[in-house]
Image (cartoon, rainbow, N blue to C red; front, side, top):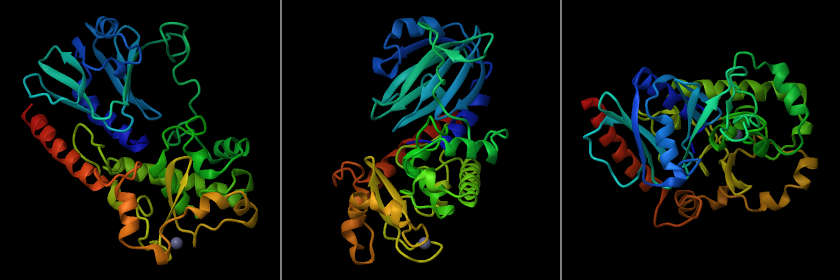
Length: 345
Ligand SMILES: [Zn+2]
């Protein structure tokens, strides 16, 4: 699922294409793509508005519109956004289209249909995005942005010292920190030599500093490389290359780039977690409650080979019918077609 660097890339690609463009219509073929599930109200709400800015908050693209309104776009598992000429052929996975006055269309393509698009108003006083009914702030429960220049090590320490629980689930908790997901949590923990099951309460000040630095540097590098094009992720101007730089994510059984021991994989909260059990040690105290999770560990030296490659290739459901590599290959073909369309625009 796209995380901070991927969504930031999408927002940056969209900005020059959309700022100044006026929306003249909207159509939906899957109402649940809309947070409101009301395509008529949505079309009425966006028609006639001009795009003022495109940004990001957490894992959502935020498109500011004239008249104190804004669209939020959550890509979730397979969401993609393309800006193409209106006469470009549409495939069956386009869930929502914004028609622009200049003859282009913004197309939201989403194979698995988990993506969500919301239309909100912006409170003129607080600047917060609020829901039309009830006025609840959309991002009220979301933690700070880790790449915000004002987000200091001191802030991070204050934040993490208030939290209990283990590091991996904590880092991917959006109320703790915005935009970090599975990929960059695994990478930041490996870089800071902290075990994913380590308890937040056991961190010493040097651990906190390493983790803070690792989160910020991995996210900065990933933004520079346009994110990691894994599974279906692509941006309007094409793929990212960060996937080539990842040290542990989806590298089960491969040697750790630091020490050479094989990368292990465990499942925490139904999500794969990749780490090096040699450079990311777990204290005896933390190991106690983690036994059940660690028993399911894969990627050990005797377990390497086809069996474990298959396990990772099969994706979350483990089915061999749609291996991850095949999905990535199919998605790449779509991306190339979309890139050709964009070039012709
Ligand atoms: Zn290692």
